[in-house]
Length: 602
Image 1 (cartoon, rainbow, N blue to C red):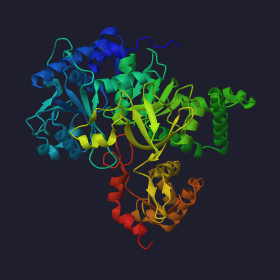
Image 2: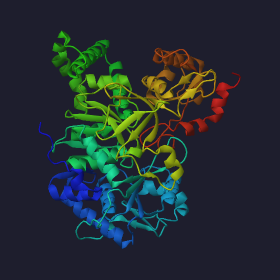
Image 3: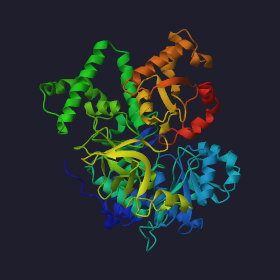
Image 4: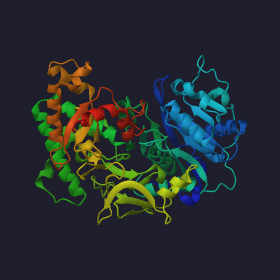
């Protein structure tokens, strides 16, 4: 396989707008994006030349609004070509883009809009406007709201324009302001924050460009690669990895229709490159396990044999394991088992990145053993975002890999991971005190994560400094490790470990609906009755499963009490971030009375 000769260097791009201009000039007729047209029920293509022409229309519309260099403009839209058009139009004119999660709550949008003084907001349509209507009086800085979909009968706001009526029919060439400084602010990205109000991370052209280029040095891509994009572009993991990186390398991006249709889209697009959060891999893993539960015992035995042989093969390929005669069985195991899994992912996947949260070791091991090249990485919005990632030929799945070239990582005396390099943010918007707290005088960014770095340079994230639970006896527990272990049980859809300052640990658990229904009915209970969640027969069963999942943990890291909850945590109700991380503080506040009941009398 030949390496991609089309990668645009930092010197050629200089800025993100320069990157777009160079790409559209260098390969104008190459397919840039694939998207699904629901009216014609077919996938369509857009070339780089078409993207450049359409982006010029957006620029003309921006200028008609009287926007000036440095003004902030926001976008609240799912992944699609128009997201790129908006962003590149803004970048070329020297505007500052403020991405918003397309399904965010109105109150959060109002806070971000006011804090960053957004002057123009682009939304997808009715769903976004419904969330904004209750807070529209709290959007005083926004002079124009542009909706891709028609809001007829819903609008009642003079600021609203329909996208196709707002855009001019034609426009001139794509514009790029003169003397655009690569170190100037290009985007304010609000952290989804697991606690408190989000903070505006200020990123420059050079921050993002350097991170994109360094990330490309860790993998091999070619001009035949195609990526399936489904994580929100409002998050820096997808924005850098699923937008700027393909732009720099000339890779085609296909936009998935939705998470619900992801399985179908994988078969249609057959991607070679994919970026995901662990939850997606966990769901696929759970589906595999559920399927095995419904088959005869011999099916699970064959599956486990395939995983065992596949893992030995993987370790041998990585140079960590010796050759074994059992490896001769791989072709048969691959045909009977592994190929069935890889085909469901499209059958062509060469690189599958996992980031945003820890990937459970058993999940990583299973996919790698079956031939799915999962590479765990690590980063922060404040670092544009990638800091470390595993390599195809040096993949230690328990770790988050090696630092990117040009990025320095170090561990402080208190175990906190520190980072320094070109990708570290300019600072927090209008918050110099917090900036000074996070970035020290030597330029080291304090990540807030506890880590260790081994002799080979591989980084292992072992917890969050703020999330470490200190029990009443002084024992310290990382709840993330326990939560991951419990979530490996198919019954436990979501888990939160609590116990700060208390004599023992407890767990708040949201059961998986299908498994909960089967369990309740099997015990003669009504799954729709909330009282069933705390029935003694149910809880005896739950405690047995908890003990099984935590059997390898030390004695003090055990669950004494558990509560099953009837309401799941979601992005929509505000208890998960867009990358499906649990907002720990908010959930604990919401369950305050329940938690007091757990510990009363102890």
